[in-house]
Amino acid sequence: MRVLIVSHFFPPHVATASRRIHAIATAFGEAGHDVTVLTSRKRVKDMIAPLDGGNFRVIEVPFRLPRAVEKCRAWLKAGQNQPTQAGASSLRENGTGQSGLGNDRTRRKYSPAGVINAIRRRTGVASAVRMPDLSRYWVRPAAEAARDLAARDGEWDVILSSAGPYTCHLIAMRLMNAGLGKRWIAEYRDLWSGNNLYSGLFPFTLVEHTLDRRVLRCADALVAISEPMSDWIRSRTDKNVHTIYNGYSASELTREFTQTANRPFRLVYTGVLNTSGRNIDAVLGGIAKAIDLGIDVRLELAGENHGPFIEAVRHHKLSGSFHHHGLLPRDAAIQLQRNADALLLVEWHDPRAGVLTSKLFDYIAAGPPILVTGPEGELSNIVRSLDRGLQAGDSPESVARAITSLANQEITFDPSALAISNFSRETQSAKLVRIAELLGSHHADRSCPKPASWAVRESAPPRANMQEMRNA
Image (tube, rainbow, N blue to C red; front, side, top):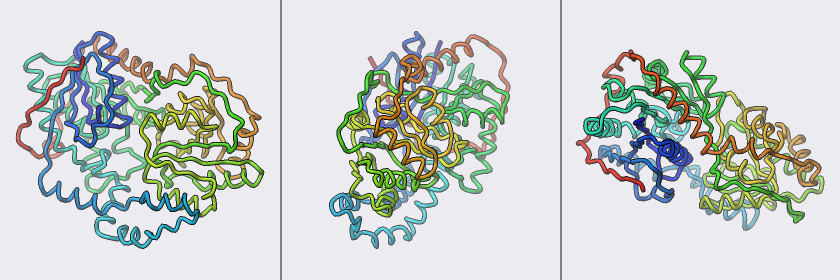
């Protein structure tokens, strides 16, 4: 079976999405299929996460942004309101958090670039989530490269497009309308028009709803990364919708975990911890109450862009019980997880949003018990089903009780290795391969209206020379 995977993300770009698509391509290759990955040319600064090659071919298609767009992008980046590492270092060193940079951050926040960046963060535009996005300039050269490949080697039995960005679906739609694919699987790593975290920007939202409905109508099967996301899609289509979790890498699975009696009790969080949409006060208030109860708790945070969280730590007077590691290489972050006494997960205030952070699966593989705070949702459901931790509730008091129970080893966990293995990236990818094989084995006439030219018209940079690499 000939398979084309369309994904903007792929190694050596460092991202959870890149690791996911690499695992999927590897699973298809190991199953004996002829696999091609169509992806964008990576910038040098992104090429820091090489993975072992698989039995698949990678086509990297470069694209060029208009000069005006490049200048605007550089201007916005220069004016970005990013929390500074200096502020975090000051908090660690003197416990006051008075970095002396507050006025500078305020000025940047209300500068023209700061205001536009705030709109981007709220709407998701130019962020690989909502329209417009810079990847729109990749659509035409990517589709042309795929057409050239199909003219040489023939059509594909299955085209799998993985979004975001949404442009991957637009490319697949073009290829299907050109008769270059027999079956189309549309994967949503993020919801598009139904995204609850990013509102989109009017009037682009009108176009998004039109195109998203067309994807749901024209794809032969649909995939999402969480059950709430799958439920949202099922409510809008009669097609088969499958949940394929991000999963953990089997090579990173820790077989045994033994809690140490050393103090302090290390509660670890790795990755970006957004304060909006999550009850951070319950987490920090619970830690403060546990400390009042005599538990020596140390909250350790690894990652970047944690300015608002660091300010909340200072507000709760927890500077002396907090350590910010900054951005760590993946190996160092995994080791930090394994050395923790407990791993922290914070559920979104609305679990129906379908946000299922990929760090859940890293935590599952790491070993230490997982402490989930916030409302009941899929995070806590999966953690409990695997007996990998507990749900601490959404109040400082309940969080404090949970921390105390874990620190005093009053609760023991006995996770099933077999159940955990079902959430490995390899197992989840193999599940998707079986779905594609079943889909590809049934041929039927497809009828899907072509998208209106105004809806998918993209700028036309010069035809790109594609770079083709065969991984051993």
